[in-house]
Length: 159
Length: 344
Image (cartoon, rainbow over all chains, first blue to last red):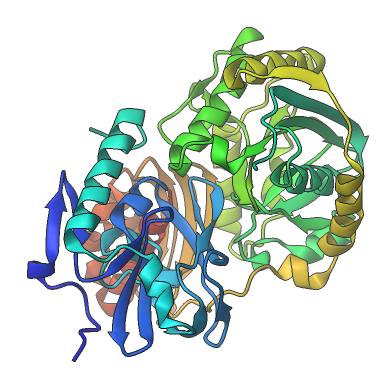
């Protein structure tokens, strides 16, 4: 059976001070993660680097259950440091559940981005969408480490 | 093949425009830049006062009855920040550039697009700085209201030169049921939001120099494209609808969140009532309770003493004092903690 909860400690890795869950897939350009929770069904969230580079989250706007998702298109918005930006969907499908606790309290996304701070659950329109994401633990780790180095070099995150 | 890379910073001064147009014009520019128009610095001054709400904020934060009875339109903008009172003593500026040209870190992108504005203030002899919260301030006071957002493939940062500020009205347009909170909000606004009475023409010129230098672009006076003009008319219609003002769908809070007003980063007021009828109204200045009014039915003397004890205390330590009031106190403390955690 596929786990629907947060990553187990065995699936977690610390990469240069940032937590990384290896039991899910990532869309590198958006820092969104996708975790298969049942056949054809996924949970979607944002990774700690995406959170860190946004600043303190003040508002989250998430879609209602039943909303259609299109890969690469916004499914909601988040506001941090008075900056409103889109949350881009890594997959196409239909929203089946929304994390209202996170919408109520965006701080939850900052505190536990891989666990209680998930954003939505969706039914995939095409499971092949997952093939466009990176899922191999080594590949994920390499990408994550490179992004941390890049963000540190540019001053986007602290040393 | 990608779009040609422009080395031009288009500068458009819309001059004095209606309140509606003071919003829709620059939104149209954002759609234009997203569609391939060059980076643009625009200016506008509203011809009359109005109220403007950040994209994700609850429309109920504004006292619509007061606004309607005083002829103040209310519009929702597509960038962040709270509800603000705007009038013709404020010169608005907007810098809009392709999203791909800014840092992927939103915090960084915002800082890099506010720093040229700080430089412009400094050219005019104003001792402005960008504080740790990314706000343009002089001493302790915020001197420029800003908001930012990504509109399709363009990033826009809006700000203003506040030549004079009507604190009284800025506090009055907010929906606040508690008179103590309203008075405290006004007190903190007077203390922490300041005007900068410099020559707006000189500020505009300094801003053009500063942004063109920072972005490495050649400033060139421009006008809206036909497509942008079409967008303006479309936005004019959209922005006055009840649906637009209501904003994106929001999930109703599942817990009592109280009423919180942010005056500037780190400076806010808060009012909440527990189910027992006990209530707290607090002003917070940099994580410390500045002033507190606590009411607890049947425990008035203890409440007064507790309010005195709370003043000056870190918000994070309030739970210890409030716990003396049993479940009500715990409820109030939890609401206060949530309010603190939610704020940038």
